[in-house]
Length: 362
Length: 148
Length: 113
Image (cartoon, rainbow over all chains, first blue to last red; front, side, top):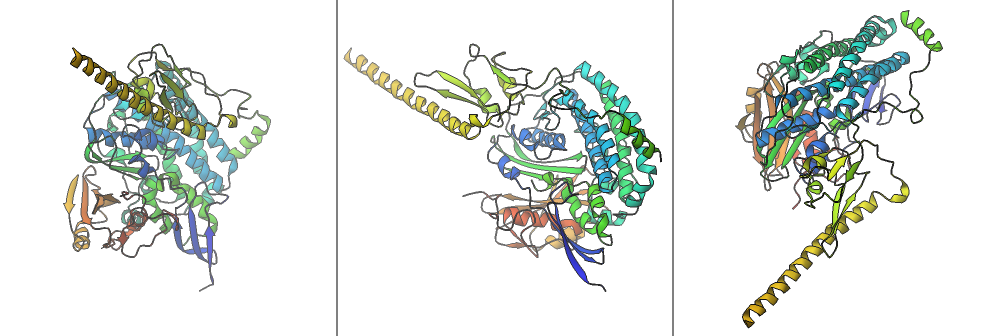
C-alpha cells in the first residue's frame, strides 16, 4: 500500500464552472475516498418565499433560483400553486409552456456538451458548439422577451402569446440547426482524441443507479428508463406531441454525451408538433381563492427530476415551500463515481455529471 | 482528420462574434422596455403597487390628499404584472425602448429604500389627519344639531 | 398522495419493510415547523406507478434525536445533512456543515417567536 495524500479541489478552480468543494484521498494518482460540501451559494430563497412575498409573486422569485433551468422552476411552482387553489389552466397555455421547456432543454444540453469538450482538451469543439447554440438564445428572446430570466409562467397560465411571425422564425431556424446537429453527432462519436478521454471514465452500473436513486441523463445513460415526461398526462400532455424516451447502456461519459445529443432530436420534433398544432383558447384562468392544503409536483428539468412541495394556510403568504433540485439527488452517486479513477480525469467527469449548484444550495 | 482541415480553413474566414455595443444585436419588435405612466387617466387605486414583485412602484401622498407616482427603473424586472393589474387601459403601459444604465450619482438603491419608507409614512400621516378632520366636522355638526 | 403516520421507534421497521431498491424511488426528506412540534416527512414513489407518492410522517419535539435511515437507503445522507443545518434538529450520526458554513446562525428556517 503506497502513501496516501489528501488533495482539495476547492471552490475556485480553473476548470470548475460551479462552486463545489471536494477533498480527495489518493494513493499514487488513483482516488480512494472523497468528501464533499456545497455551502458557497446559499441565499435563503425558501425562507424569503414564506415570509416576504405573496403567493402570486413567488413565481417570479423562484425563476431566479437557477439561470439555466429558469422556466422549469417557475412552471413547477405555478403547477403546485394551481393545485392549492384548485383551478385548471387553458389548453393553449399548456402548449406554450411545453414549447419554452423544450427550447430551454436545447440550450442547456449544448452548454453541457461544450463544457465536456473543453475539459477534455478540445477547445475548437467548445467554440463550435457555442456558436451553434446562439440561435436558441435569439429564439428565446423572441418568444419570452429575455435571454435568460424568462418571466413566462404565472399562477393561472402564461404571460405572453406567440405571434405568427415568431412561429415562422422558429421553424426556419430549426431547419438550419438540424444539419448542424448531424455534424456535431458525427464529431462527438467518431473523433479519436475525445474517445480516449471519455470512453470508460466515470462509469456507473444499473444496480448502482437503482441503489443510489439517481435521476436525469445520468440515470438514463446507465440503462434505467426513468423520465418524468413519460409518466403522467394530467398536467402537461407530453405523449400527445410526440415524446419518446431515450436510453443507453454503457453508463460512462461517452454514453452521456451521445444520449444528450439524441434527446435534442426528440426536442426538435416536439417543438415542430407544438407549433403546427397550437389550439385556440384563453391564456389565463382568473381566480380569487387563497391557497389551502398541501400538494406535490414533479417536473423534468434538463438535468433531471425537479420536486416541489407547498403548504398553504388560507392567507396570501405560504406556510412552507420545499424545492429539491436534480443535482441534489446525484451528489451521492457523484461521490461514488470517483472511486478507482485517476485524478487527471476528474474535470471531465464533473462536467459530464452537469452540476448546477445554484439549484442545490438555494 | 476532417476537423483538422476545417479548423485550418477557419483561419481564412471572418469571425462570428458581434462587436457589441458598437454593433447592435438582435432586438425583437415587442421588446420588454420602459414602463410609462399617464397621470390624467390614473384613478389612484394603487393596485399596481400591491402587485409589483420587487417593489419598484410606490405612491406618496401630501397633506391635501394628492398622490404622486414614483418608479425605480433599476429595481423593476419588466414583467408587466402592473400593466395586467391596472383596471383602466392606458394609465400604465410598456414601451419598447431599452432602459438606461443606472449611474452612481443617482444613488438608486439606498436612496430608493429611504424614499419608499417616507412614502409609506406620508400615506399613514395623511390617513391620521383625515380621521382627525372628519372627527372635528362630526363634533361641529353635532353641536349645530343640538343648538337647533 | 398517500400519508402513513409512524412514530420514531417504529420508523426503521416501517421503512425497511416498505422500501425495495428495484421497485421504489426515494425523493427527499422535508420538515415543517408547526409551532411546538416539528413534522418530518419522507417522500417515496413507485417506478411502475410514478404518479402515486407515499409519504411517511412523524411529529416530534425539536430536541429529540431522529434515527437515520442511511442503512436502508444509501443516498439519504444528503437530505439528512441539509435538514440538520437548516432546521436545527438532531439526526443520528450527522454533523453540521454541509449546506451552511460552520459559523452561520443555525436553524434559519425555524419560526421566529
